Image (tube, rainbow, N blue to C red):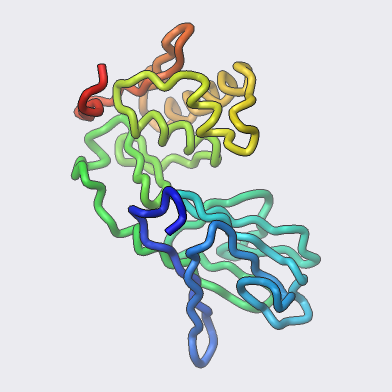
Amino acid sequence: MADGFADSLPARLRTQGTATPVEFVLEARTTLIGRSPQCDIHVDEPLASRRHAEIVREPWRYLISDVGSRNGTLVNGESLDGEKQLRHGDVIQVATTRLQFEDPNATIVEASGLPRANLSVWVNQHSGEAYAHGKALDLAPKELAFLTLLFEHPGLICDRDLVAVKVWPEYGGRIGSYNIETLVSRLRRKLDLAGASPDVIVTVRGRGYRLTNPDVTPVAGEP
């Protein structure tokens, strides 16, 4: 099992509208969809590009993006524009081929057993969903990654170096303070609009950030 995936079951894609549905297990870090026989999911249609779309598996979510196809990729009937996080039940369309995304982790109850509505902020690490007072938050991937990091360390300070590495792994953590502060500002605005106090994310000057979430117990052994 790939690093970071030990606690989650792989999602699947299931063909729709075919006499015999075909199932594809998304175990790899990346799954390429397209007309080329070398693609992980082969779509044998002239309207499909040789390399059409790509799904990236992360420890708590799956991201899909179009990779420059001629005719675009649809998710639930809408054209992809950049990366999009897949949710259980989403339907991907490449040419006329329809693939339904099925995530077994979407039904897994968090070990804490805490009701979402009881918390200012609640993150389901398995499905990659975030909530404010029980209401789903519409977060960009970087915003979700940052909030998840804080949620996984309740009450503890996540220093800027850790934030940079976890939220921007593609840059090896070489991210300036401006990028982090801009991300935090955007996330606080979204929390405020959702009814959660933006002060739930605390800036600890010179050190980093922490999440103040009532009824969440800090990690044992940490200050």
